[in-house]
Image 1 (cartoon, rainbow, N blue to C red):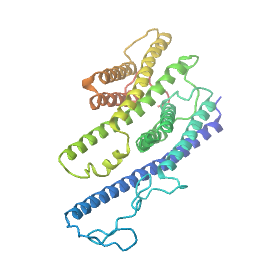
Image 2 (cartoon, rainbow, N blue to C red):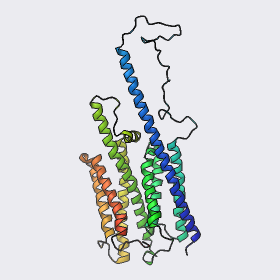
Image 3 (cartoon, rainbow, N blue to C red):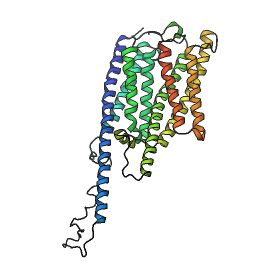
Image 4 (cartoon, one colour):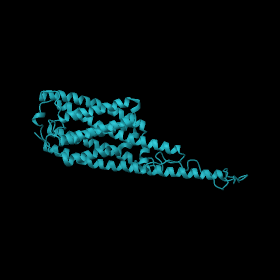
Amino acid sequence: MINEQLAQISNLALVVTIVLYVLALIGFGADLASSTQRRSDARLADRDREEQEEARTLQPVAVGAADDGSGVTADAGGARPAAAGADAEGPNGQGAPSQGTMSAQRFAFVLSGAATVLHVLGVLTRALATQRVPWANMYEFATTSTAVVMLAFLVFSIRRTELRALGTFVVGPVLLVLLLAQTFWIVPAAELTPSLQNSHWIYIHIGVAIIATALSILGAVVAAMQLLQARHERALVERTADGEQSPEHWGRLGHVLDRLPSSTVLEALSFRIHSVAFVCWTFTLIFGAIWAREAWGRFWGWDPKEVWTFIIWVIYAAYLHARATGGFRGSRAAGFALAGFVAVVFNYTIVNTVINGLHSYSGL
């Protein structure tokens, strides 16, 4: 029996969640914009200061510089040394918020936390309304997996605050998936189809698949940022080797990358995320084969969903092997991770909606 009131509450909660994610995305974007402006201003100030010091060293120093009795001796040009700390900046650079004020990043992070709580509430009320697990179709799979993505991001960001700079690149894809779910994949709350009823494997197999998909999304974001950060770092090293001062690269995007952790830190984080994701994809295959034996009388039947899940597993296995091989660390290994994510997207969209198979979701 479907509880229509709880179903409506679930839909409303997810709509409000989307609004909060939009505001959080604006906050993270504003934080990146203000930070890049502060860093650009600081670099220009450093460049001007270096030019002034170079010009001052070229000027002849006056013999017996005058002392006006204040204890501070003027230089050859009559200028006094700047007071200590006069040009000091706040912890976040020029224009850093004073104590007691909330930065754009912290505000966006708090909004993301509130949106995630409401997101989880929407998923749970959907489960209560249907009296079953909230992942029986693409709409529910999307809402549940994106909730897991945000929970994972919040957990990582609480432990390592520098990872909050990735907020724009995590909230953006989550918001996109939710918008697609609310626009194209939404279906009324309904009971399970007969083929899915009376089977405990829907809890185990699809539950593990949701975790695997969520970790693949988060890992792909980190891997993409790793690739960009690695190229940015190489470009800065090359420009510095040429003798240029205050090297700039990629304009505002370069300033954004300056805020992110180094490529080695991102690579290590991507490896940890994908390692867990690979284990989840492994059990997704195993549990799926066991469920197929119970439902269809065979462990493997070359169904499109089975084939593409195996392809995903092979690509992530290649990524972990490449990561363990010295010659394929860094950007080369990250390429395998992104290839695996492309396979995940293809499996979730094209295979589910275009290619007919035994795994086709109901209600589409």
